[in-house]
Image 1 (cartoon, each protein chain N blue to C red):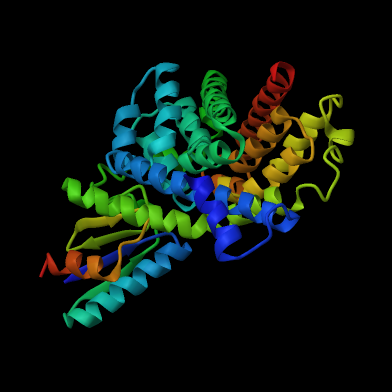
Image 2 (cartoon, helix red, strand yellow):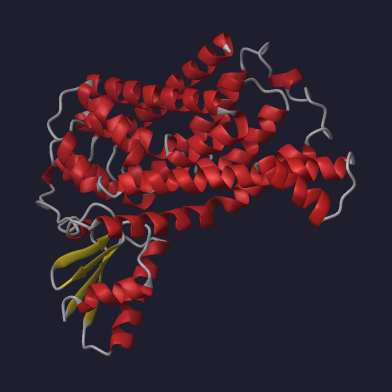
Length: 316
Length: 79
């Protein structure tokens, strides 16, 4: 049905010639755009409703004094649905530690939250199919699980700034329980808010698919950074770590790299490195973490993400 | 009436402050708006900024920001 609509707009409304290169490209573009925006709107809306049940205060309560492993799994999963923006990373971190959430479990949450979310999954699904989206989500959760587990095992509590442990802010409040109607209202607002922020990146990504497609040779990058090159994954991760972007912002680059022959594992590793770690985030976290812990965090993340990249290059 | 806007200083926190000011002006009420950027102080109320506290009660926290009508409602509830 979407296909019919796309071809109607292209060939009837805009009156382009059937079989022309521009017409075909535009039809593809319109079809993809409608499909992805529909998917995004529906899924962000549904997740937002779920999200309204998990304010950070509640997540903190669930995670406090949880054992490692179970705690890490829960933290990684809650990272998907708990709303959190990088500017609240510091209060969030302190609040978790104060409530007795183990350090490793806190990290599982901090890793999963920016990396695995509905926007990333829907965009990958819409552009590359559900398999790639599922792989990204599954391995993203694994990276969060193991990253947190390792940090917990290393007993690095001494490298957290001392003042964090002396914080006594007590029980934060929670906004009074909402009626379901209010949750729907919140979900609508949140969906509009996110779409407003990401639409341009998505248009660019689809544009790359529709128009640049066919103008740069398909295997242009594959020649340098394809499966045959063992350094492709570490290089992709090293480039991605300092870069700062959310999942939507990196999608156009991901699409371009994928189109031009980089292997899936390399591209997914790049996307994870960009979303999970960044220079600005490190500067924010430096307020609560001492440099050795930050360094350990970056190294563990880079290593696990690289491992994921190799794994998928090997089996896909 | 006492209104507190909680936020360490990100763009959304400034917007929240503007919303609170506009709401107070449009409602024509007498209220003191205080900007709280100290983390310890913020965390007495919430973990997710920006936050809006009216007469000591947390009325909004986190993204997305409420619309101006919603902010007026939240403040009016305390009049």
